[in-house]
Length: 166
Image (cartoon, rainbow, N blue to C red; front, side, top):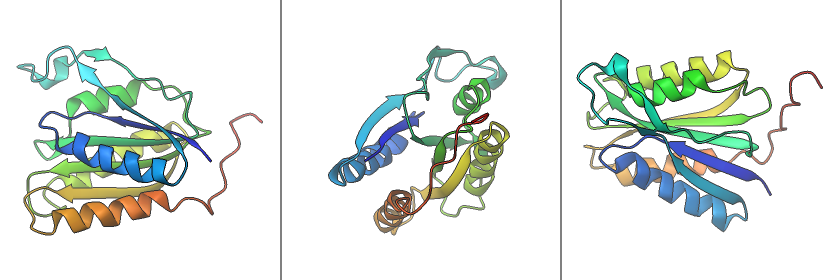
């Protein structure tokens, strides 16, 4: 079984709710799971470029890390972007990424946000094995959450990458 970290930024609670469901499913499968929040000093600074982080969860203890964030202005939240950019090398980690958004379709910022997060993680050597976009205003939201969680939990046949330099 694996030690898994689910690290999220959530403003309205939607991202946190999805993360809780994922956490429970992974624990039901026998994994050790820790759910951590990235917390900014100020949730909505006047200038998003001025985001500062108050709580910065480490990724080192985990074999697999799931990052989750809301979409803000058709892009990943500035808080999660800053968090991911300051992370150390992720070369020995399997990573999954999801975003939540109020718009009904992924092309309305969700896909772009996932792409931004994936690019940052891969630039740090991560093996991004799965991604997801949850559109909060869709009637099919719960089914989409369950499908994404099933996909995120299906990593048992994937080998862990060897840590860089080993």
